[in-house]
Image (cartoon, rainbow, N blue to C red):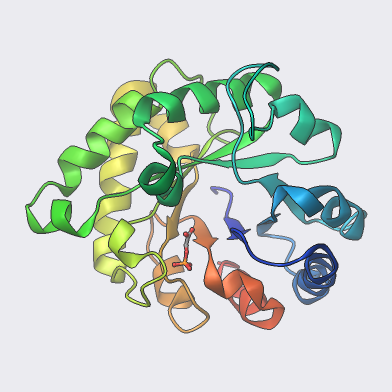
Length: 252
Ligand code: PGA
């Protein structure tokens, strides 16, 4: 059976004290749901506090980005070692907001993911088409490019390795989630791409999350799709009870 990974992307939300309270609450509500890998990704300022807050629980903590160099003159960036040293085990890479507002490209996504993997962080690599691309019938073409360039030369190991988050940009923060049919179609396509590059076994073991307006109201039907292996949750991850119900939906 594939892993199920449900990750909360807090984005630029919560102050340190709020983040610690939220992290403890998430740990409480998800304590019994050990079949699901639960990950929370707070802002960098309180990553360490959140790691402390969930110590001894099953919750994994992740950063929201990582640089490709080990260290150096890269103002505003974080290195893989910095994340690892404070106890983060995961990192989101190539989120559509990074692509849209901060010039992230498939090439930089590739470099960041390479560094994350070689350092021992589990990357959650985000891909997904915009509304214009979907309407122009280019969804598969875009996904193919993002996977080809974004994962170029990466060593995937399936279980315990790199995670892909399919996040259609038109569904992020809009309240309009992809339908289960749309999600399944895209996930099946992405898994097919992985099969071509990495073989059946690794493709079958690689987690592909869905992201984009996941809530406790739609999580059950999205998670029921055979190729949907969890979720990357933005807004709804900021409320522990709602996030807890989403995690529960991942208990297949
Ligand atoms: P959303 O964000 O759940 O608020 O739509 C998802 C994401 O950006 O990862």
